[in-house]
Image (cartoon, rainbow, N blue to C red; front, side):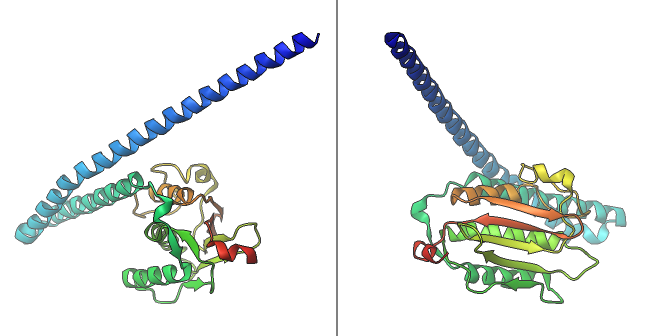
Length: 264
């Protein structure tokens, strides 16, 4: 009896070990395939940059040299070409960013989130010329340990989305802050925009996903994918809450500078 039980346990242990090895091999294969895909994506994006620059040059020449000679329909067609070339350029830039998110922790530094957000807001004022102050920034947010340039991309993308998807019937309000009601501090960007419809919420972090909650909004549908990958590369998480017509809040966690964690 005892021998049979021991034999059974030995077989089970071998089966478990074999399954673990198979999972390890599958993880290695997936990681290799992902690396190959990222490499291909990076190469393809680089290859597309040259023809895009060429198209931009020819479009600009056409407009400068023959713009006055074109009929109204011709001017509209030329404008359409120019707009789509710009959109393609943005798409390629986003794809390059996505393929380049391989952040090494050795590149991390202490990042002051308040300083970072203040810098971004200055740039946004230059780009959008707000009539009223839409931003409320919480003071003394904790410093984090991360990659400043990539974190700048996260906040810029979330803030620009809040601006793009604003509710035209109410003054724009965007709140940037951090709450301490969790084990880890939770950073957030909250707006009073049009919100994300329930039909789009499950795919909002998918490639090329668009919420479809506001017409005539430019974008590639890659921005939030990049944001999510950057947060995950910082060993954090990102999620959101949204109500149609009331606004959206994106929450995310980041590694806080070690000496600050004891106070949370």
